[in-house]
Image (tube, rainbow, N blue to C red; front, side):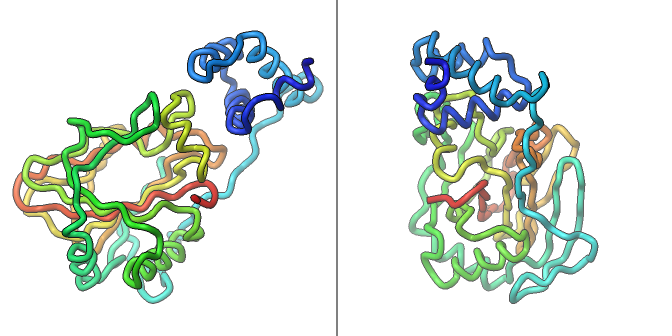
Length: 285
């Protein structure tokens, strides 16, 4: 009975148990979440957790979590050759890992991407914590358009350049999301990583895994306001056409980085247009 408890669970729950035990989460807390969100029988949940705990122990100690591959940028030079374009490194922080790039996109590419998505813009949603569906929320007041990977020559060219810049496969990423912020529009402080303890975000982990990194490309200049702020580290990036800010959402063990709390500050004058690229652990189908 004990040996079959863990494998009786869906694979995403098996992985969730192992990941959270590796992070030293308490078994009783994991059991409560499984009963509450997964609607599992408490006895089955306890048995599965105990089985996973025993299998992860060696000589009485829990095996450390394994290091995962991550997007990587060599900032030893001020200029990076990203396929067809030389990209500048303007700022580099190690903890959290935040890099400000210049010259990621040309003015013509920025204008073309704005024109390409102009008629597709709709009010931007957020992910519901309970069911994983997208819904409108007052904390996010922009309009946006979701693109499919490689849906046009322009989109494919930009995605391949990004893959070269951050050393991460194109298929391990979501499609570009183009967002337009007009006067007063904002996106209040939030994280891009998915919280595995919540049933809604956990559904998104089933396809592609965690959002390990984010790249925000600025498609327009903004007269006033509209910066990307990181309140936990006192950093604010002002939009500049063709530039981009990159940051890792987790550490190399898969633990979410709470220092990556960020916000799109309200636009005071002008219009801010950005293209966001979220990078996943594995192929995002």
